[in-house]
Image (cartoon, rainbow, N blue to C red; front, top):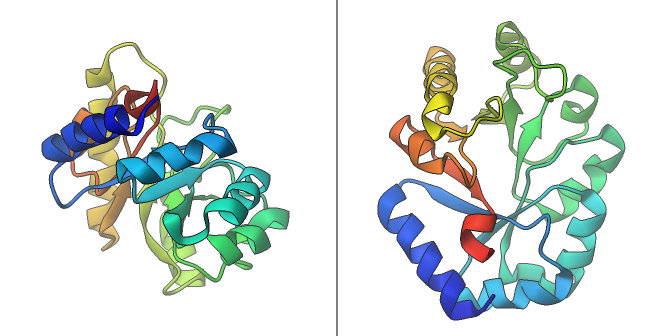
Amino acid sequence: MTADEVRRRLDEIRAVAGPGVTVVAATKYVPVDQMAVLADAGVEVVGENRAQDLERKRAVYGDAFRWHFIGHLQSNKVKVVNRHCELVHSLDSDSSARRLTIPALLEVNLSGESTKGGIAPDEIAGYLDRYPGLIRGLMTMPPLTADPEDSRPWFRRLRELAVDHGLEELSMGTTQDWRVAVDEGATLIRVGSVLFA
């Protein structure tokens, strides 16, 4: 992985996604010492899945990136996330919401899969009532599929829910289906291997 390769791929994604979409580089599998390549390539926003990795990488790279948290948010890790991130994509519990001091997106489990995090769609209004000003938008992870088009109905449904609740931010789409997510109104896409594989 070289900075030039990452820059070329990042530029290609940005050209397709357009200026209204934030490209979040998902760095779960990027070792600390390789993060410098991303900074050199012009990556601006990174998304971490684990609080301990976030702390380690932030200690080395500081303000070289804007930091987002995209993994499952445990309430005992909220303090770390508050300290280092500007946005959480994966809020799905009252215990975490009560502790958050930074903006968040509610993770919505549209498919009802027990292996996925997220709240049920009918819980969105309650979170907005209980935590005014905290929630900026919604996030989802559709069922795993080989065909990106299979994700379209889930992304469309999330956009409809956001409109229904007056929310503007939509974090949806990963390496395999980000183009479909952009078609359906994503404002943030979380990509990893498409950038640095």
